[in-house]
Length: 337
Image (cartoon, rainbow, N blue to C red):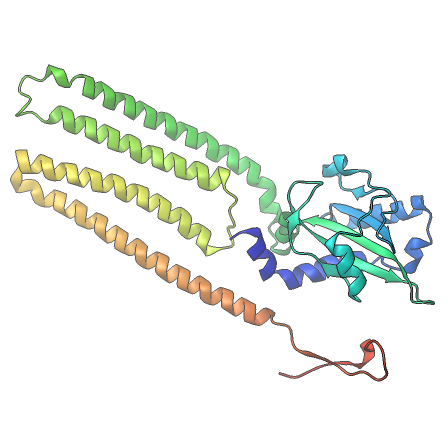
């Protein structure tokens, strides 16, 4: 599952987490502080919430006041004082919504990774005018890992990838060795004394090439699934995809071997032909079992996703206005379903 799907499934939790982080300092006093005091306030907020990557403040016109307060990973993203951000979507959302707003995932210019932005407009309680907007960016992978309590495992991912890469390289070397032996067997075919009677050489070369291809597919699958691709272990579809690729590579190799045995036994030992047939039938049973597993797994996951969506549906809210103008929060009542 890609990050956009994960975002929409956890959108409510993300909104609560990010909004709660910035609401703790979102007050008119933030704009009464000196630039140095405001920067210390933002730095303290980031220290308490390590999933935040960038923090900065905009004035009522969308002009950034002060440089970015960044985490230790993003030293290159410092600066930004005086930048006009009135064209950014989070600015337009913040000035048109009374509470915190969270954007959809987008590619961050600072990190070159998918991130989300939470923004909150701060108003003058005396005159009601807009003082400015508090803005925070968070990398979507980091905040999702925190929500899923997966941040500890993610810290070990680089080590896991190194081991998978080493084992994949070892399998590739084994595949190359089998391939070289296969070519050597082909080079010896001209030495046959009875080429029409002895099929040992061609069968040997075919078996070596088949094994080399099977090992290569296995190494390629491990390298792609565990090193190059971004996996979500919380989704059963990821396990199904990996298992399907492994079983498919094995089924192809076993099918080729079974076909070779059919030819070999048909020529040399017809009475043993049933063994090759059993091997092909076992391959067919393996594919049928894989198909049933994939179908049932996909069906169960779709039901689980639908159940989660139903559980996350917000209850309808009725806003009862006591006077003209904006609704009073104290008069907001939830309807019973």
